[in-house]
Length: 97
Image 1 (cartoon, one colour):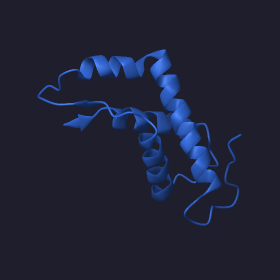
Image 2: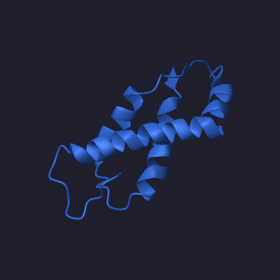
Image 3: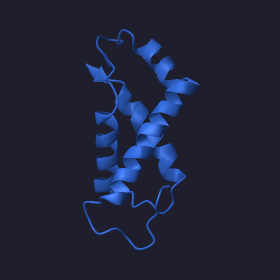
Image 4: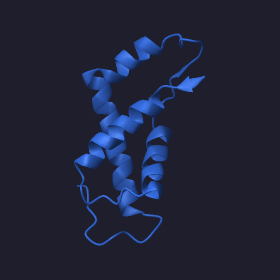
């Protein structure tokens, strides 16, 4: 069984992180952003070999509206982590508007 949204959130995270050069990006901040983003999306599980429904779900997640939703969720999670880091932020860390 696999939650297909996990890979999509990871890809969206990398896209947003690249555009936020001052974001800490350490493993703790990375994990916090991913966890928050996953907690604010509905899981999309598939099972079997190959996973049934995986193709349709991936197509949905790769659509323009699917990508916009994922980027928005990751962006919100990143803003939260920047505002509430679980460690001392490095100097020059970014603020996302």
